[in-house]
Image 1 (cartoon, one colour):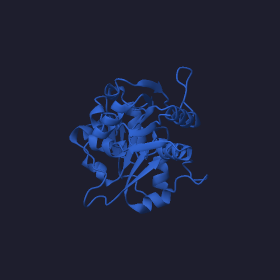
Image 2: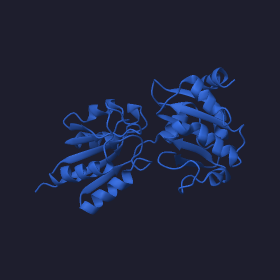
Image 3: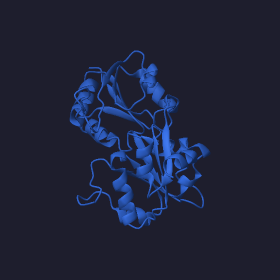
Length: 258
């Protein structure tokens, strides 16, 4: 029996040109592509011979879009590989950065299916960079902490986010999947000891031509984002490095955070 293989591929943060050369090669080998909702469909030009299967997820489902259960995705990958197919599991950003790629890797490993991880550019670095913000910078931040606000209690009551630890880290804080909790995130950080004057930004659809952003302070960023009409998918960046945002972003702040 022909044995298949699964590539766990990071499609990057949105800009199709940020796809890696290795990802392009893997897509070219694929018989089937299992694609997430937030992946830029332009990258599928590299998978001309493959069957495309949408297995995306959304935090808030509707009658027109149903979220695919994780267990179903894992079973489908195994079944397709055992049938001899080369499968490209195409995920936004990097598969191991809040993308459940680790769970999929373990499912494939347990099933005895060959797999290869193809790392991708994560939005936690690329989205801030798109407005001129390095997540680390000499004299401003010696480290960065990536946090997901999805599926955990903002108050830490269920073993979720440890806000005092984040503040003590003195690193740049980058929150994924946290836009709906932006006001709560800001309030928790201030309550944990981070000054409300700390620079903060929200970047929507970073790296894309449709990118929008606000640059403000921790105490006013939620108000600024609401006034600007920002929405998900957005990334939240908190720390002194946000002060390096380019002139265009700073002008957005003056318009929406004044």
